[in-house]
Length: 392
Figure 1: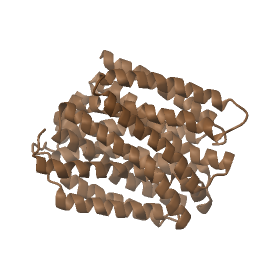
Figure 2: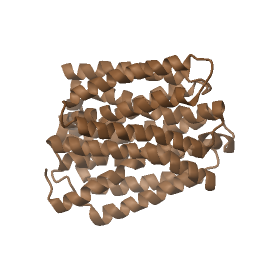
Figure 3: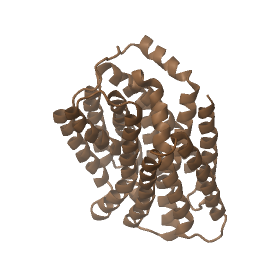
């Protein structure tokens, strides 16, 4: 550990407070998406495009925040990222057309990406070894709280106010985080790197040549897409099939989020007794089996909620077992350039998720089959990439 106890006590809560912003901005308005479609007089594809735009810009922006924070510090980066996020959220809240909403989501994502890179980079600045694995487990636990709480909060905000209230809520949360950084956060990087293209290029080449890093990132990309695809696809499917309202979907999404959280808690217990790689490998194999069950359910003529909810809850739980272990291993490869490696890692799995979800958005969400096929493919690809990471 590299900090004193007093500094550690303030750093851990601030790291954990940063985590829900990026994911929360995706999920908080998921229950309202079918209703935003009607309000802005558009179709499901363009509403889903607001999510895809956010994910893609979220990923691209991480490539900037990594080296920027390595050069100018985590604290400065957090202030700038917060400002950008608030501007994007305000434009989204005041938008009256789908075009403006899509544009605002790109700005919002650019700011949110800062928090995603910073929480991991600060963790690597401060911790190492087994302590780092424990902290990344905490990170994945809190990361799970966003899909747990955000759709429920969003469902109530839409039901009692309007869909714009979801974005105002994000602004208030970010302002509270700025207050915490201003008064309680001390800089954690003391050996800052110059922000030069030649240095960035040299570090980037080092990362791009590391095969294990990229196999791990591909595995994370697949797991990330499995997690995100539920709130992306399910609101339209369940509205069409079962005519559910925004609050009900919020609680359905809550079950998925709790399942993921349970997975992280189980992983925290298991990691004391088993190797992280063994836990991860078994969990990925079980994910493939569960995805095949979801595929079988999708072939039935009738649709029941448990056809979707049971396999997806199990997939979320298993993702909780995989994500923290895989992330800790990937981050540990480049501790001296943690900002850049974290940025490249996050950018890649966001871009990969964006590509798969863009493909998924072209299927009319009236059947479970497209989601099932995607999950089978992603589970199989994550299995291949994980074992390739172990061999290299």
